[in-house]
Length: 389
Image 1 (cartoon, rainbow, N blue to C red):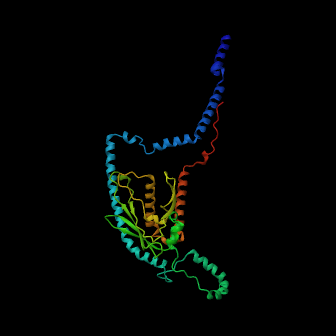
Image 2: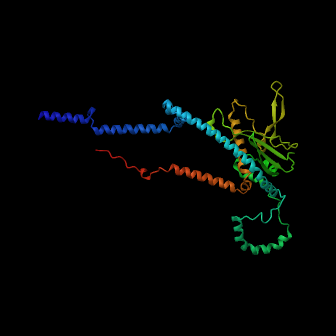
Image 3: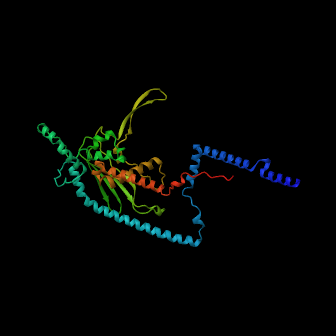
């Protein structure tokens, strides 16, 4: 009996674990330690400096090779080289494709000219469109028809007064291009209040395509005679590159703008709004006397668009500010060519801007659907795990 009691005590001691604690107590201690560790991790991750450091380390990993390609057998690497050569040939053909696209642009630009000239004539009141020219049904016309019956009585009452007054009839479409510039966010930031009186004289914007060997285009801003400058046309030329970069051919994504050249604006005396006079006081160090000096500083203006920064020569490092200015300039030039000039009336009415917003909303909705495609509601509320007793 004594031996049996000793054996039972030994088993009890083994179950109790070191120090005589029970196994349940040990599990409880481990759970508490785990909770403390999780709390410490959460606390650390709430530190902005720690998060910034982690993000920096993750960013440094972007674009790094996994080592998979390097680990492949030589015979496989040899086949990959063959695929890259095929890809290079594809890129060269793609460049030829864009060259032919440019030739088509030049061809159809001549066909568009008649339409653009007629648009200018209507805007500037050189011609009055005929009834057949104005046949265009819109929601505005339907609303006018519905309201017509209700307003008939009022119109008859006011008829006598209207006949006595000269009917308001502005010539052409006033401030057509100024309204377009102010409607488009990308361009509106360029237009200052002191630019508007000048831009009211802008009567047309054209695109002239340049044929090979130098691919590119020229924006032409045609102005009425005005009191600000003597130029009738302000021009800005954009040079484009269609060939892939020999040092990095696989980065090719089609023609790109590589430089732009503006023109000299012949401002009339005292009318140059791109500069401002600033009076500054200068104190002589030795004598202590003070004098007032007048200096000119650049002033924000839409017309700075015609004085773009020069593109640095190849191999010269470009600072961030210049790179940002060049990028914005190229984007604006491309936007004028591709959107504003071909669809001017739609930017005047705002319809083109609404279409762009709808496209952006559709893209956002598609992204949200992609993110939720693997969503499983049943996994939201997971039952807590049961511990075996």
